[in-house]
Image 1 (cartoon, rainbow, N blue to C red):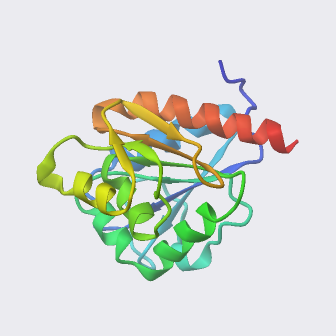
Image 2: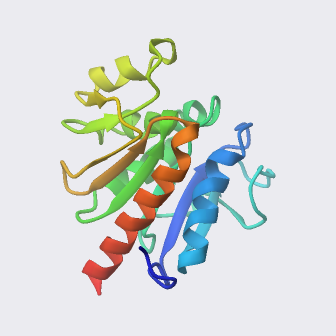
Length: 189
């Protein structure tokens, strides 16, 4: 069980384009980190756009991987595709996952930006099981192995990437990412 102050002083970034029509994807990790002392920071790819999450929104171009505990890349139908084509978002993901000892998470198609940033190579990760989404092919082309589990963490590479399979698995992904973030916080103190 994670203590109430497990993420005290740690910030989790939620990059979300305004086009994403599935507010539960970023809202779920937002709601998971706050009760254990974490701060969730929504990052938008468009300046001044309102998002289907909470009030405090920053532009991705204003953010850097420094000072953040982790990115959580929400799933959804449109959002991950928009993020993977956004230069700032790609650089943000690559910068974060280039840091040794970091932890990040992606829900379902939220793996698209890490695939595009070339940070999934040699990792075993879960994703939406339908071949129609194309994500299985994208993982294979990026030299990542797809496993069919609700949540899969991979420690291959310089950091940890936790992936969730589908929206129904969000509570399990939230629990896994809060646990991993708390472990990383303890290891740094």
